Image 1 (tube, rainbow, N blue to C red):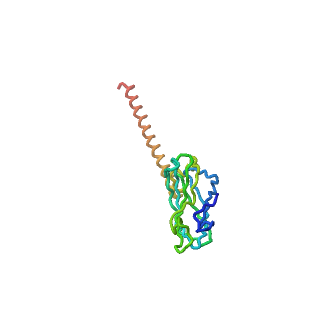
Image 2: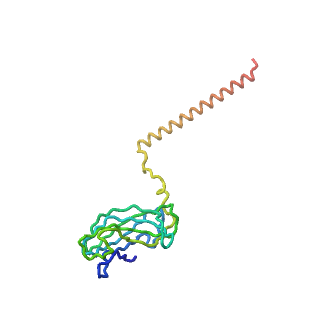
Image 3: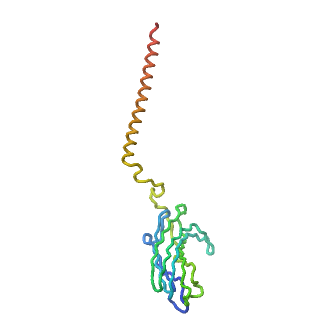
Length: 207
């Protein structure tokens, strides 16, 4: 993955800030929908002053033409509130999950950082404000069919819904209930047999 230049100092080739983004589990940038994806973002501050990383958020867009695009999903932002001193580097972990309803295809993934730089920094380029937002990642990715396990798509229940004592009481109750039902059925059957016998006797006995 290439280093992303986030801006230059005046009359210098060294970027004021640079970032690189990798996806450890999906190096080919083919992400299954409905499954959390982790992005590791390496950030380097080459400013003379301190940089404050506030938060990072992502979006999934579909370019409908060369000039227009459609936002398909905005991922929740992650707060970091981290200070990166001049010359230092930092690594940020950002997780996102593509909606399973989005069909498999090529899309553009945007990862955007909200930052602030010390205002007394004199070497910032005119188009690089002391605070604002910059894209850490702005490239094409592939969304594939969901590979989420079935249990992740269903309501999860506790592993032990009943305690051992409650399970034993429930078992006894079910046994008693089954015996009661069997007894009632036996009584009903016996009554039916007795009634049929009386009816048969009355039919065969003319007196």
